[in-house]
Length: 239
Image 1 (spheres, rainbow, N blue to C red):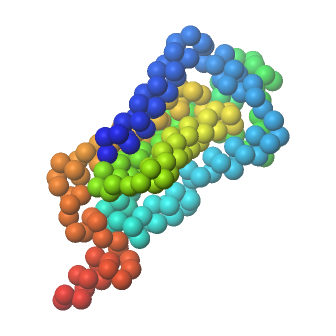
Image 2 (cartoon, helix red, strand yellow; image 1 turned 60 degrees about the horizontal axis):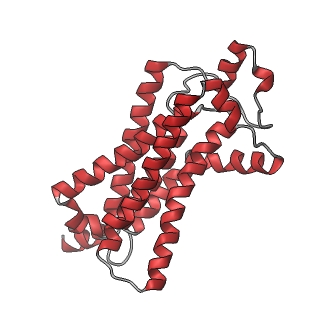
Image 3 (cartoon, one colour; image 1 turned 120 degrees about the horizontal axis):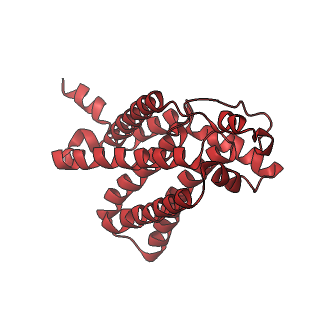
C-alpha cells in the first residue's frame, strides 16, 4: 500500500504546491485568463463532455459497480462522496463567491473571457468546486483501495508495470477533470484547489477510520453484495 499510494499522494502534493505558487504570483483574473489561453474546437468538445463524468448519474453508477467487487469499497465511496458533497454545499453557501462570468462582468472584462458554445454558464456559488471534489474523491478512493489490494498480492514485472499505468490514470484523470472546470470558465483555480483538498482529505479520513476499526478484515467488507458468493445471499441462506 505504502509505495503505490505514496506516489499518488506525492504527485498531489507537488500539484498542491504548484497551485499555491500560481495563486500567490498572479491575480485571480490574470491566472484564469492564463489557464484559458489554449482554447480550440477539439478541446471545447472534449472538456464539455469530460466534465460530465462528475455529474449524476455517472459517478453513482461507477460507485454501484464497486458492489460487485467489495461491498465495503462501495460503502466508503458512498460515505466519502456524500460527506464531500455536504462540505462543499455548506462552504458554497457561506462564502457566496461569484463565478468567473459574474466576476469578469463586474470588472468590465467579460469580452476577454473565452466561453465554450453550448455550455450553460453558472454565475454564483463558485467556491469550492463540487465537480473537482467529486473527481478527486473518486480517484483517491481508487488509489487507496488498490493500494490495500496490491499490498496483499505479489506480482510479476508485467503486472507491476500495469499497476503503474493504473496509478498514472488515477493521477491524471482528476487533474483533467479539475482543469475542465477552469477551461469551461465555471470555476477559478482557487475553487478547484479547495475542491481537490476536500476530495483527497475526506476519503483518506474514512479509509483510515475503516482501517483503525479493523473493518477491512471483516467478511461483509470483502465480499461482493451480488454474485454467487455474495455476502448478502450467504447470510440469507443461513436463516
